[in-house]
Amino acid sequence: MLVRSAVDAAVLTADERGSNSGRVAELVRLISSGRVLLFVGAGCSALVAYPTWAQLLSELEREALRCDKNFQISSEDRRDNPIGYAERIKQHILASKGNSDHFHDVVDRLYRAKTPPSVDDFHRVLVRLPFCGILTTNYDKVLEAALADLDPAFGTDNSVVLNRDARRYISEFFLSLDIDQRPSRIVHLHGVHSDPESIVLTESEYQGVYGVRVKPNEDGAVEVGREWTLHRKVLWAILATRRVLFVGFSLSDQYFNLMLKVVSEDLWRWDRPAHFAIMPIAPNYKEKAMRHASKLEEHYGVQVVFYEDAYGSHEGL
Image (cartoon, rainbow, N blue to C red; front, side, top):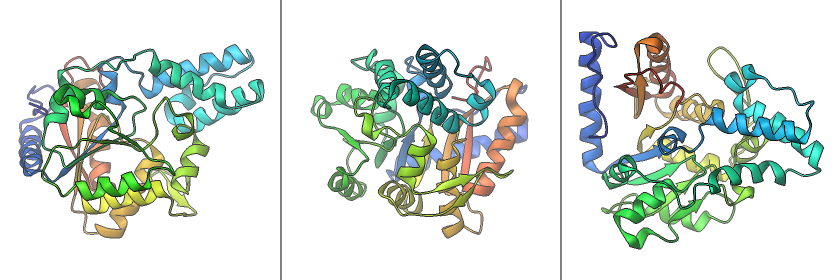
């Protein structure tokens, strides 16, 4: 089963377990209806040893130091401002090497080392469920490989990379959401490792594809400027017209959360949650997880379904 309620009394109280079980039941009902769109984050690929955000930044730090030993590592920025930190690393490598190709080559090398993609039963179960469509911010093709395991016909040409060349395929993807069949394409919102121009990783790349800058504040971020780019249109349309399940996301990305906020303010001012996210909970970060879940529901219309992280090792995935 994809999700289960956390049942350890040391993690959730009886009332909390009851509420969580109710959300599980509602999510299962919605998935069974075929009306839910799956949105997959890096935590899912971490299951088969692809890098998490923190691991990717650590590798990029090492590359920055190889280019110039004077690069200043910041564990605080890596934790609190990963997109801005990635931008600083990119600019450091650019200044050292004379172009940014080397930066994206590091990303490609990390992911290409696991070719063909590793797949486990979790991914096979995930793509077998009756989701109406699948999107991901991941740079790998684990989900495509899982689809190919399910049906060899899906083994080729089943990636849609959201860049300027993908408009026709995006149109086909939206039309396919109302067809009663298993999704055969995976939309990559932030690119794939083998196509450097498609990668969205740093602050300037986020600003470029979403046509917006963010200014941090105590609620997360506020919007500064607006341009309706293709990425912004696609994400807004998905969040405004579909029930979405987020899997493998911490939902702490300022730019991504800004789009959740924009859509919720446009359409759901009455604070009725529209989407779901599956997240871990453990005794060592229970209060933090609960606060985060409350904020996601209040500000972004996302209900969190918890699963028990027995060893407290899934935080941040």
